[in-house]
Amino acid sequence: MRSPEEQRLIREDIFRWLDGKLGSGRSELSRGELQDYHFGPERIPLVDTARGIRNPQDFEATLTIMTSVKSPYGPESITEDGFVRYSYQSRDGGDNVKLRRAFEQKEPLVYLQGIRPGAFVPYYPAYVVADDSDARQFLVALDESMRFFGDPLHMTSDERRYAERTVRSRLHQPVFRAKIMFAYATTCAVCSLKHGDLLDAAHIIADSDSSGFARVSNGMALCKIHHAAYDRNLLGITPDYEIRIDKDLLAEIDGPMLRHGLQDMHGRELGLPTRKADRPSKDSLAVRYAEFAR
Image (cartoon, rainbow, N blue to C red; front, top):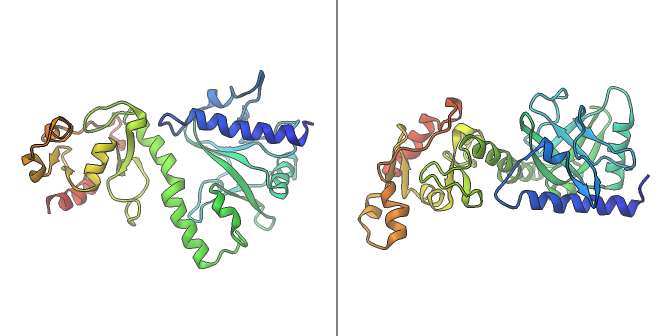
């Protein structure tokens, strides 16, 4: 068994390693990348080859848990209250013991949400915040602020409202971004810019709206200038995927950024994902375009 200090150093190094991997506009990592983490010269895979939990033999507590697109568990997706519910093993084996130890010792871990085969969005540091023996589930908090609820199994109405806002604003966004960037091949749908650091996953209907679901058909990959213009109704997109620029903005004379960045986009066709199911919803575009037209 590794010493507690070495285990702590490895966990902290994993978080730094993930920061580095995700520091260039990325939201997802491949299974191959996650299997190739090294602590110094030592390779320590962060995913197991056949199981949804990584419990290295020489660690006292769980290192990572993951859900694949076709997970055999079912209850471990992010729920409206912002927790992952991770089911016990059928028998009280080592996985249960090490997850329980992570709960008791408040050890940080990594949660990996599968978004398609072999691709995962990491949340870290995540914490096991409750052991629900009646439901035979562990509750895992993906946002550190949610560690400090009095009782995650029995939240107050204020805590639940806070948790639901956190889910919309922080927890769904990385998965939404990863799916959007994959669908649009990390390319702005308006101007074809391909620099991931300068691209956003833009909602058509705002995620704060009850119909603003975090699904690919309610989003587009937009560079930051076109995202800002779209959010402020200076740029509109018709239900037939044609780009329009605000008439007052078209009449302005300001310089090359305005001309080439916005005015020259007027009348262009929107770049679309290859898969028809990923293309922007025409109904949602119509709602937003009516706002732009007003």
